[in-house]
Image: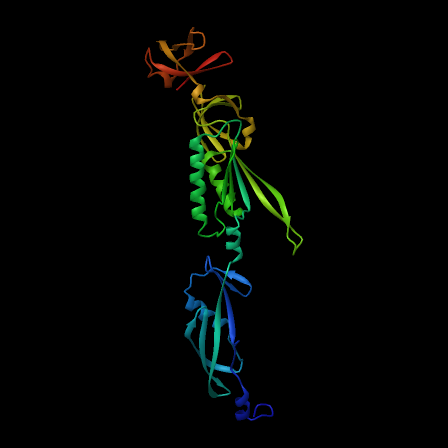
Amino acid sequence: MIDDICIDCFLKNFQMVEISKNINVEICSHCNSRLEEGKWQESFLPEDEIIYRALERNIKISDLVENEEINLEIEQMKGTIAECYIEVVGDVYGVSINETHDTSVRILKTVCPTCSKIQSGYYESVIQFRADKREIKSEEYEKTNEIVEKTILKQSKVDKLAYCPHIAKLKEGYDYYIGSLKTGRKIAENLREEFGGTVKESPRLISEDKSTGKGLYRIWISVRIPEFETGDIVEYDNKIIQIKDIRKNRAIGYDIKSNKKYNLSLKNIEDINLLKKEDKIETTTILSISPKIIQILDPSDYSAVDLEMKDEFKNYSIGDEVKVIKINDYVYLID
C-alpha cells in the first residue's frame, strides 16, 4: 500500500517523466550561441547535439524513480522542427516501469545581444592615438595599425566584442573605435609598450539604462606618445641625454657629457625637455687630434673648438666627419 492506495492502482496513474510537448531553442544565426535559462552560451555543437541537450534540460524525473535509463531519439526533421521520441525505464517501489513520450523541439534562429551589437557598429571604447607637440610619422601609424590588428586577433579568441568597426583619421591623430573596453585597454597597453608615453581614460555618459536607471558610459582612452624619439637630444635632471630606446614607462639614453647609460622615467615626462631632433643634429669635421685635445670646426661660425679627448673619441682620425650639438654656446661631440 502507498498511503491508502495499493501499488497497482498507484502505478496506473503514476508518471515517471514530465516533459513539454513543444520545446523551443533559440540559436544565434551568426555565432551559433544558444539561449539557456535566460543566458546566452557559446556553442560549437552540431544541431542534433543541441536538440538532445534541450531534451535533457526539459525532462523532469520523479524522485520516486530509481535506476532510470533514458533513451532519446530524433525521429525526423521537418524544417526547423525535430520530432523526438523519449523512452524511460526505471524502478518505482521495486516495480520496473517502461514509459514513452513524444515531443518536438523547434529551432528558433535569432540574433544574440553580442552579434546585434556588432552588426550595429557598437563600441565601448575609443583609443585616441596622439603625439605630444609633434606630428605622428607614417611609419608610426603603420606600426600602430599592426599592433591594433594583432591585439584584436588575439583577443577575439576570448572576447566576442574584440573588433574595430571604425578608424577616424584626424589631423592630430587616429581614433580607433573598439567593440569592448577590455580589448581597448589591452590595445592601449600594447601601444604604450611599443612607443612609451602616457595612457589616460576619460568616461563619457552616452545614455541611461531605462531598466536600471544607471548611466551608460563609453571610455575614451588617450595614448599620447612622447615628443622626443630615438636619436633625439633631451635635457632631464640637469643632464643632456641622447635617447637610444623608448619602452613603456621609461626611455634609455646616454649622458653625452659622461657617456654613461641613463634611464628616464616617463612618469615625469613633463620634466623632459626636447633640445634637438635627430635630423637637426649638425655634422662637422675633425681638424686635429692630440692625447688630450680633439679639435673640431664649429658648424655655426666655422671657428676651431678644442674639446677634451675622451676614450670614446680615440678611434677618430683627422678629417673624419662627426656629429655635434651646440647648447648654451658649448659644443658637444656626439659619439
